[in-house]
Length: 65
Image (cartoon, rainbow, N blue to C red; front, side, top):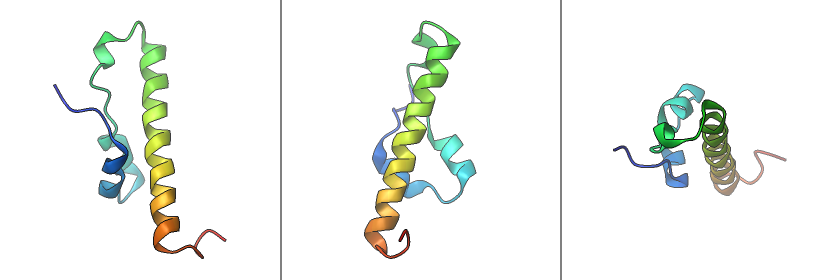
């Protein structure tokens, strides 16, 4: 069984396509229906995206101003 996506995985993202490949829900097959699985994937992507923004802002605080 693959491991669940973690905010630490944000360091592995270099392009948007990497985000799609990295995000994985190890319990996807156990979800009640496809809509709930898609919702969970969106949450994982949002967490990674927020972590990427935090990392970029931490490295160069003037980049987002």
